[in-house]
Image (cartoon, rainbow, N blue to C red; front, top):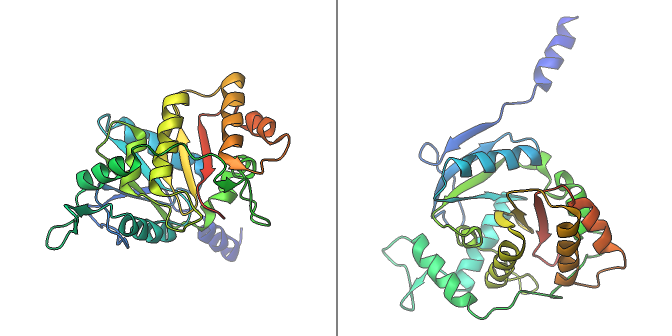
Length: 260
């Protein structure tokens, strides 16, 4: 082997996955991070992210681990605006001034504002033209949907809650008027957790991630797929069946919570 070919092979070598605690280098975030955690570097694949999330959560049985999924910077930006828009960091009608935001306050506000909010059905379109963002497409190819190869890192926050849905308070999202707002996303997450054992594990700029302790059999996948079809408007004929085929034998689900 020539020296040049050897060097070429060296530079193509993938960097190893690494976890950097926030205590060592807390990432800058537009809205500020209220929970401890780690930065996941060089995950390289959706499967690797799932493995990291499961391992971190198993090490912390009293917490839930919430990942950033697609476009971390944009997800943090819209989350910060969603927090401000819905007054999720407000105490007694006033925003924090000299006091830093507290996770317990934000969680209490999110829960209170979500009281009586129905599971969103038919709020979003099944897909937007040219975006390849329908549930079948993103669950068929999560690597492309989440742009895994373009993500430099992911945040894994250690959220001090027992119900996975409540982990949404660590990164509530849904800033634009056409998106699900944080309260609607919480209602959806609660429903999926209660009905299917699918716990929220990730929030991206446009996608929510859910997973369960065991893979879904055909019957569970079919029922879930029909539910998902009902969450969106304009679901085409045969879409629920196509989604059910993908979900059978899996323990995870990705859903878009934004217009596009």
